[in-house]
Image (cartoon, rainbow, N blue to C red; front, side, top):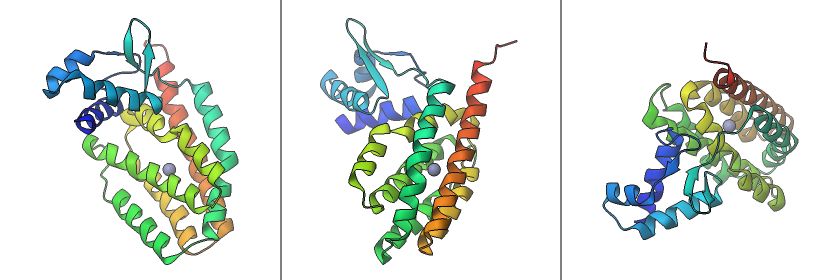
Length: 215
Ligand SMILES: [Zn+2]
């Protein structure tokens, strides 16, 4: 029942049915899912650990505020320092098993159609899986744990929901995956750098649109 509540809330947060800053009423969620409040509370505390909701004394839970453009740029600057390195290290450490996993992630991402809201959270999950896998394959636990702690993808996809165009990112991912499968560290490093640059551009444009005065 915790999982049911978690999935329900996560989908609502990712698809902006619960908008950034919105209050989340535990009793309403419980009633809607026809479960008790305890699993809803447990799901919310899991989402709090992922920084998707915040708990405020006397108020309860709210959806985390949208990242500002400044915060997004800082996040990407950090990722640019780390992820080209993890991609290069991963390319040098490929095994048949990791190649098979990469190919299955690639297949999952390729099958997603732009503009389909249901497919979008699948894409977000596949993207998360890809970047985490590359970090794990780098063999540097410290870096992998740090990237996981950022939960960058969830925030990014939440913000980009309205500009849903995963085919661009899927094409960039394919260049990264091809270089990894070929065991090409320089190619993987470069492809990751380009993917993060373009991803930041998409993010920045989406946020610029939101911050612009509504005239
Ligand atoms: Zn990505």
